[in-house]
Image 1 (cartoon, rainbow, N blue to C red):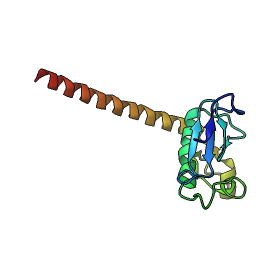
Image 2 (cartoon, rainbow, N blue to C red):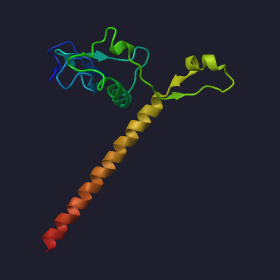
Image 3 (cartoon, one colour):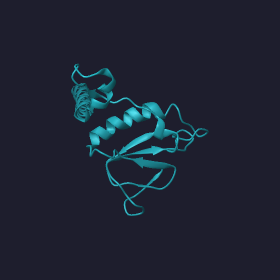
Image 4 (cartoon, rainbow, N blue to C red):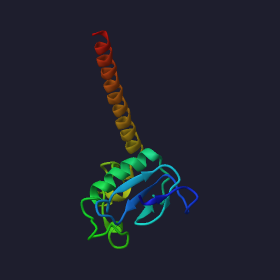
Length: 148
């Protein structure tokens, strides 16, 4: 829809893409694991100071889309300058010692990237369990039909 295959354009991997224009897609966010290039109507973002795994990008994709998608539309594009760049999101952090002054607390919090990764991996594991359970029930139903 908005991306090109590897080699057609400059490509990047393991980052987030945000669609800024589209009848129903403005504000949609995608975690891109494979090398991807942009054709039009979207842009890539990546954390500057951190090299994160794909699972963290999946977590960030969900958080960003929760904020961006309801806010933007074809009439109010999700462009970067003075719009999306100023949107705020909340991320899980590790709290600092309670002895620190409250005014400095925000500066001392560390983003909990390992929590984000573990959370997504747990969701993936749970999804696989549900798929396996569904498949087992389907196999059982087939066997019962065959016996009859």
